[in-house]
Length: 113
Length: 112
Image 1: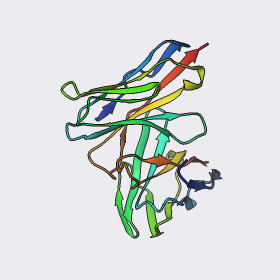
Image 2: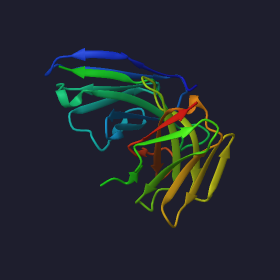
Image 3: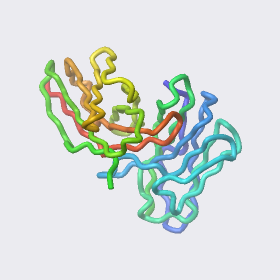
């Protein structure tokens, strides 16, 4: 299994509060991604990173920001959480021998009340 | 507009039989196609992939077929086992190390 951890695994927060989710990898892969999974939508890309300090927006980036100051860590911040951001968030990495294969972390279930 | 479509939300198959999961795509720029399996409360697990220069890739009980002219791919599982019961996602990308575009998933139930 790829060495990807996510923290916290579960979080309940109130509308309007900031929230930061962490993804940590031990594979030294250059590329990291944040997706969210919602019923009826599959997985959708929020942001991704192609190197330290290099990030780009995905399909559903509004209300989210990211930072990557080290190869191993990719942080996702909800600046002011809303109920529409209640979801399961998955981090993924790529950059191994087969460049197009991505490997996912266990996910963070976030509930915004 | 959905670029990757899995038109069957669910599929039920008897143990030992073949499971066939289908996926269609609209973007002709996609070069790589992947299948993931997902159990509840876990992250998606990579299953098998295929690049657009091939039309078939096999790994044990799992085979993926790609028909580029029809923009269609399928995952065959033979023989199906109860442990294969999960949600299967089809995904596509334009090149290596780029974000994946996912279908909405198909829930496979393998009945003993």
